[in-house]
Amino acid sequence: MIRVVLADDQGLIRGGFRSLLDAEPDLQVVGQAATGREAVAVVGSTRPDVVLMDIRMPDGDGLWATEQIVRRPELASTRIIIVTTFELDEYVAQAIRAGASGFLVKDTEPVELIRAVRVVAGGDALLSPRVTKRLLERIAGSLRQPADLRRLDPLTEREREVLALVGEGLTNEEIGRRLYLSPLTAKTHVSRIMQKLLARDRVQLVVLAYETGLVAPGRQE
Image (cartoon, rainbow, N blue to C red; front, side, top):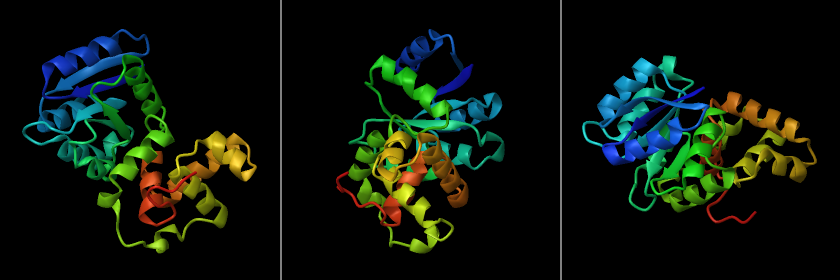
């Protein structure tokens, strides 16, 4: 059973999400919150697998709440999905750096909401690497830092190749085809890269690929 907490200051949004999720046999909403501070408390007490986190909330917004949750070791297995309106939420990049595992728009199709929760609970990035790539390209300006290739020192040359392809939005299967590897070998490389770079999930690998210059905004596949 995948356990979910809903954090949004709009009761109508929480109610709609809850109805959709609770109708699925493998999903269960175990808590709700209307403020950032309440979200931190509810997540701390319920320890869910996934949090659907609105950014714009009173008494500690979603960015603050994400930072508070991610820094707590006992919540290391909890994954956070930022619920956003893309154009309006200038803090999305900061939320990803703080440890959020992906994005949803509030008017997303019900089937995509359900799929998103399952994907993130399984440890992957939401909703697909390409979705993450497109969004990161839109907010690349706020991610840009002076390239520091020393951050990649722990990686082998092959692992750098794999990281660059993760940053370009390729799935494990596509990485395997590109580098003539099996999907399982590609997945193993990605897992080792996450361990070496202390990345929480695949989304943070994409961010690192951008920040170190392995992938440039607008680069074509």
